[in-house]
Length: 154
Length: 94
Image 1: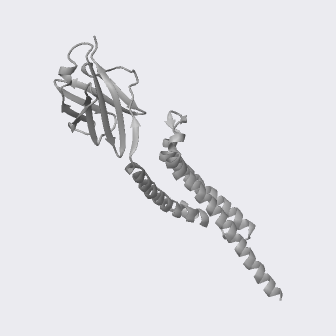
Image 2: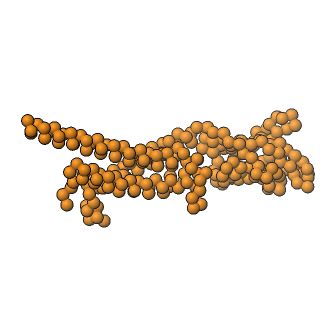
């Protein structure tokens, strides 16, 4: 290997010597740039691909590109499961006067699962029951927001 | 007088060789920047719309494409410098 290197002409030797320095410099500069971009707050809208949301039936998917959120209700506990690790999750239950009540979720075991106890189980107990909700999720400076209705299936 | 002339010519040759060398280095650096920062970071979203072999093009450039280009640049630079050496009669003794 070393013998092959010494057989190269002087320009190839210099280029092979300089290339790793440029790669390391490029990697460091790229990292700084990506980090600075990640610090900027960006807003994304989450939408339901099917247009149907039923948290009681564990059928409420919201997405934005590759980022997906699954929201479901189980035993009085509302859980959010995502495809990427999340920093914060806040769920809002909006009443008929359009007044939101905020529920700041806590992390379950890892940043992919977040939960909180909510009255959703009683609000959406019967088929046809409907509840307006909003969610704000932060991921590395990016904010994902959605306003949606959950309706219990018949 | 003739010594002065030849000295001037050598100096001119050296300058010209250095200018060509700098131009080549600058070309390499522009390609290096476009491939690594341009394709891998700045234009990544645009290139990710294109898929080659199942991979998003922007992602592929950030992970592999830029390295392949860097390797190709090393040998291209070496070849072009070899040609410059030949042009200015400053080839390496083998």
